[in-house]
Length: 102
Ligand SMILES: [Zn+2]
Ligand SMILES: [Zn+2]
Image (cartoon, rainbow, N blue to C red):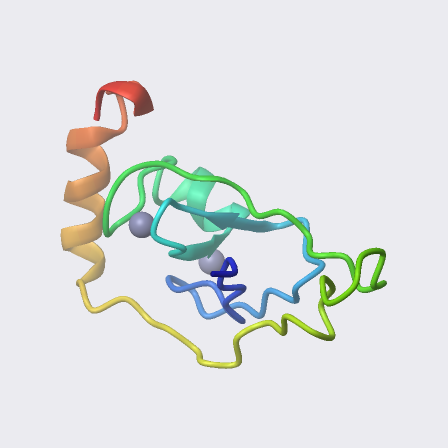
């Protein structure tokens, strides 16, 4: 099992390269850009709970078989199926609950 590095923000569609420091990810690997997470989602994943910064997989193979070239990023673009209104309501009802209590 390897963390799925998705290629885009699932809200606005912005490209998120594997080395992007703007990528945020949730426990189910839902992926969004920092702008959307901070200003639209209020750190609430539209599919579940909260986010953390996505770790950057090394491009250099420091250990055998463990690098971006051997464990590649996903190229499958993913977009949310919920409406923007639905997502706003979801964020509002959850954003003030600490992540550990959601
Ligand atoms: Zn975005
Ligand atoms: Zn999620």
